[in-house]
Length: 482
Length: 129
Image (cartoon, rainbow over all chains, first blue to last red; front, side, top):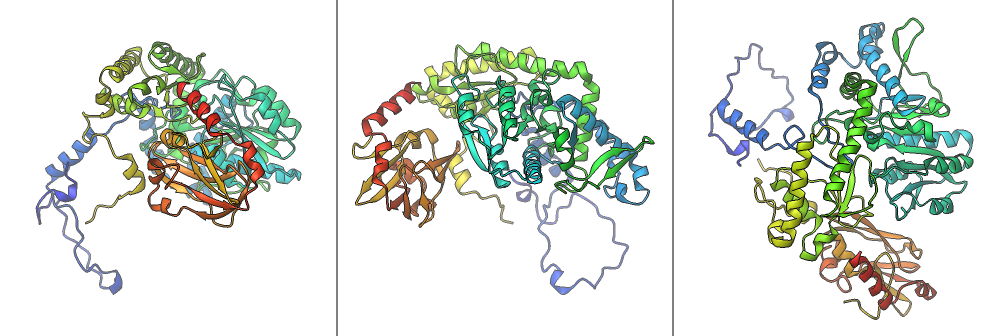
């Protein structure tokens, strides 16, 4: 399809601009005055409308198709959250208003939203207090690691390293390294969970923290968390929970109850706010009592008279980590989501997310190699290893799924599974949608045997066929030459 | 084909030591598993490496993986041709795709490495898994 700049003819206009009723200023410095006309698209209103409608029809999202991207929790984003987030009282608020004299009284509603969401997350996670500031999951990890560093500095602990299991999210070691810690990796055992004996071997007085993704990226719950936490606490280390996979355990397990000292939650995953190009994220960080004083500023507090205010006076705080108060619109949508579902609803979210993943696992395990054959949490991990003998790789299976109208699952991650295929259906899909996906996967496993070339050359039904991923990674050219 | 004259690590690096100088690369099995390689982060000349310590990173369309040094030594030179043409590893992992040369090599380290036969066994085991 043509770009908007390639459409139209010179001097065609799609909009009628009113005549300027202010004199053209001659005070613009010469160096800023345009030498030639801006090269704008010259199309009619109808051409512009058709162009963008066509583009939107090529858009692929959870509102159009099943999107089982593992560890990303691509669940449906309820439209009531969008509606509430567009209430005039919220959208027209100026972010500086609560910082002005008496301005706080004009923003009580927004402050209450932040405060109440913070309280709800603390209850859900079993933590003492959350900061709503971090703007993404990895930003939450960084904030968490900074809190870990502040704690040890305060106590005069000499800590140099952070333990990260090989089944963690890839951002965990990166966040720890940015805060100056060296990374010690612990392998998984044959059950796909941390090898406890290996953990004991690397645990010493210099360990600042353990960062655990829970449930881990194999979709498995770590059964030894309490034991690990106990040993870690003996050397005054902190247990960090990457809560990106929280969708599996809402109302079932509270990380604060089983030994975790701090964690982040991805609102854009578990609490159904848009992500993956659809909107910014939010990665609030929760901590236990002893770490509260290190939380970043500002925090919203409730005064004795029932009003809400921003608090900046926290001498031990790690300071500012984001402008203003986090991604307020995202917090608001998550708040709405939690209230709409209530306690019982959130429990059902996790129960159905886990049920759906296990349903797919059981239905497909005769066709694809299952990485670890045990009850999984919210996602199941297969390996494309059985299909390799016909020259069909995981990437080919993923591309063929596009022809069947599905977004491919996460592939080649986790790294510890050869030819990994990581499927996370989420709770919002119906049994019929899961069955359609399952039958497409079964068909592809048959095609891999009978028509491997078809699978290897897929997709064929998309506007562009198989992309050259090597050139895309090596020789990126993102500019259209005007 | 796994060259007989080389020594191997369990993480799929190879090394050839001649006159206290080592040439290091990743194996053909490693390049096949990674798929098309798009970038190699090379070690800087003069850097001291420990046996099995991190030496660099190799990125493919699938993943980024650390490269570990098979022996201790000091980086003499890195294969700068890989900066523009990392695909040399895919084409010729044991030849033009070499990653760096080390000097002051501790030859005793070779005792901790796999022979070609042992490495072949490992690859066979991985391929049937």
